[in-house]
Amino acid sequence: MKNNWAKFSFRGFSSRTLRNFIYLSLLSSLVSCSWISNKRSLFGDDEESSANEKRSATLQTVPKAQYDQLERKYNNLLKTAKSKKVVADSPMSNIPPEDIVNQLNNATPTNDLVETVDVFGQMNTTKKKSIDKRMAIVTSKLTPSEIEEQIIKLERAVAFISKNKFDQALTLLKELENSNVRQISVNAKFQIGELLFIQQEYDLAMQVFEEIIHKDAFSGLVLKVLGRLIVCSEKLKQTKKQQRYYSVLHDFFESA
Image (cartoon, rainbow, N blue to C red; front, top):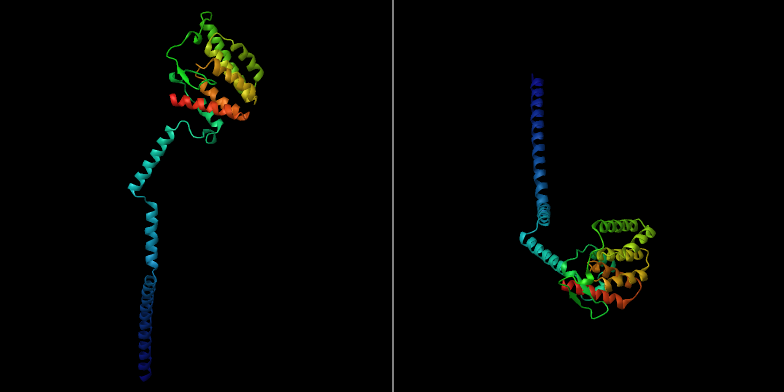
């Protein structure tokens, strides 16, 4: 009887002890988690994480007022850049001649640019309000079909130049250079100058382009011719001529 009671007491004691141990373990783990959380807060880990999040949000957004101010500055700079067609102060040091030629090749001649230019005289331009006798475009001797035929030949010559077939192109251009149609004649001369320019015959090309400036300044090709003359004089190291052609080019843009 006594042994049975002892076994029952021991078994009850073991169950209570085990249950209490489990409760204490759970309580200890909860206290540990709370202590770790307090420790992180104590050393500023939470604050550092929060500060990083705020800093990231600040870097990703820009105030509208600041954005509008930057946009206005950009638009003002863009307008200023567009308004400066030619740099007056030391243009040769800022604009490469090749860039000027590319810009002039894309330029569309207007009525204001159909002018007579005295390159080696007083560097002035005289605007023509009407076409005089020496600027007659077509003579009465040519029929529309003959004019069309010459235009086709000119297009063929340009195609030959693009394919480096210079001999075939020169044969056609020499014929068209004497055309009674002034525009065809001037374009033929210009293409001869281009042909020489492509082959780096800058001296000969300059002579052709200067002849156009002197005799056919009414043509809208004057802008392109001036661009080529600037490059030729630069290649031939003729500084005075280069400056002179820059000055004439500047006068064109000023009067336009």
